[in-house]
Length: 475
Image 1 (spheres, rainbow, N blue to C red):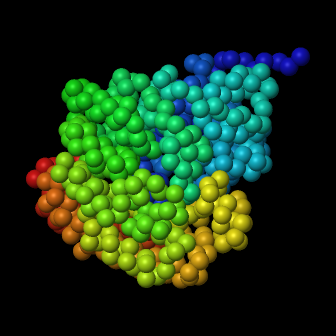
Image 2 (cartoon, rainbow, N blue to C red):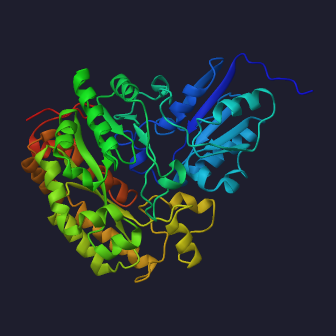
Image 3 (tube, helix red, strand yellow):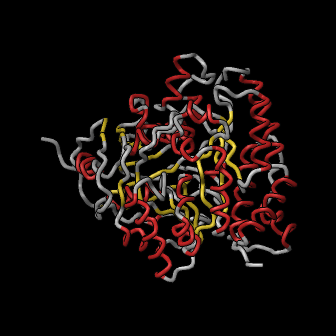
């Protein structure tokens, strides 16, 4: 008979590791958000456990006592997670790894930890804890896609207070199936909605006055989803809380002027749009159906709809697509500089494991960094890890540095700020957009150029100083 581990004084250490190769925008306290998945796992842990979150965004890992260690990791973080797990395993402490990377390659992850959680953890965590307490921890747990109506409040109290942004989630899943994206594989192709009252209560409870709504699409594709987004905004307004936020959504929300107005009134300052490309053939090759329906000729109408309502546009563009050449990349840069896009996420096509892009490029022997797991640290969207069809990998790298030089030129960023201010008539939206551009600029040039300070650039344009939390003052 197996002795049951005592239920008293059990210590769970949850760790958010950092890519030691490249810091990146999402590992900077100014731009990153708390590890909401760890906050949810903490909330699901029985009350007889003492739970701590160690966050390498603020504190480099040093060993501390624990009975069980849980880690999460994006692909670019996973080597660090494996490294930390090895330290605990060498001392006989059980380790568990979840998150996107482990979910996409559980067979790899299983070599470095005692238990792997594939998919969402809500359906398996109670069973995993029970197994551990009875000395029966399994090597593999597969999560189900549960309804989110009973999703627990994240343990906000366990997050480091240094984050400039808080985070809340209202939905999971995405019906689109873009080749380069892993969301539909992890969270499913149907939207699952949290209870609106819970969402707004959690939004209000977040201590930061800036929030990232981390949905894969805040607005959705059905009338019910649209009404729900509007309802959330109305309830935020009625709560009386004055917070600013940004979120991801699809372009077709621009057709719903009433909801855009509500979003702005509720504090939305920026929306992230997956634009990817201004070229129809590239959108077709990537499976970006929504953008094709909108039509590239109508992009500016979309941007104008946001601007009319005082919201800035953060455009996500992909560089290094199969049909890209140095000339087409330069044209994409020209397009951005002259477009109504206020700030840009200018990433290099990165074959994340488990995506259609990964399998295609792997089959064609066009992934240049395959010394796994060591090479995963290069999969940051700001490194070249592929061999494009129309140029060499080294040429793509050189072209991208030239592109970033133009995109994130200080004069261009200042011009974009003033353009955003003029079109939105919203100083805070313009400031958010500038802040994003500075963050992406510093990430692109990390290790090659001196980092620049957002507050200094903002002051040089407006004459306004910011406090340590980058709180903005209306002009």
